[in-house]
Image (cartoon, rainbow, N blue to C red; front, side, top):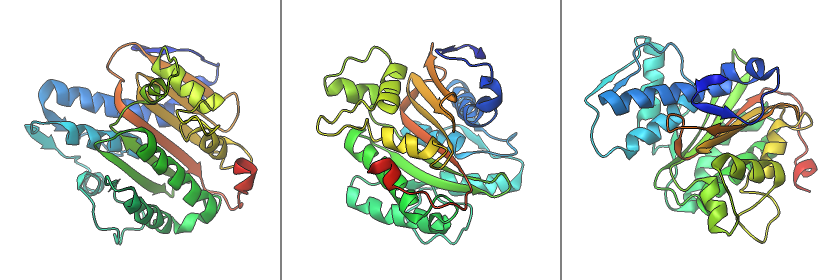
Length: 291
């Protein structure tokens, strides 16, 4: 069992630990550990961090924003480089002209969906217009679809998007977070019977179940997950967490995992989608996935 009795695994291939635990899941678990301490001690202690990924930091920003009371203390990382990065990400960015080439602001989405186009354009520009990510059209499509998804389905109070390059590791992490209704709630509101959060995510991502009756793709995720994880697409990794469920995808059909959280330790208020795209020189044909 990957994290003790707190998580129930619906599928667990033999190579599970090697493929998924060290990166995507461990980053989300780090957020859960930090959040748990803030709930118990009212102290945000990040002093021991030597590195942090978006999947840890972005939902933590959302957690802090949702608190009515102020934290008693914040202990920044002793590593100044990491401390500087966190200061940038914890700020509330409004200026889209950030000069940073790799440390990209965590863009907050306003209630006005038309503002999202500027965020999409700026994110794409900061990632070299998607040249190493399958091409500009593919990267813009990915950003646009998942941000539209937040506006159309989540009923969020706070929502955010960021894309961070990890040049030494050879990938870009794109992360989307909203504190709105979960994927399961969206599907239930559309009349679908969803017994659990993880089943709702699986039906949306794997089978294309949608909360919109006039479209075939599910919750804006079905086509995007194929694009992100297919070997003919971006050959990336994805972890989606919503409510008390999560699904992980890798570049092969066997790299698909569904998680059912047995208690509130890993529970997420809202939905988090984190995508890790390896650098590639190939131009992905968007029509192969949307035609």
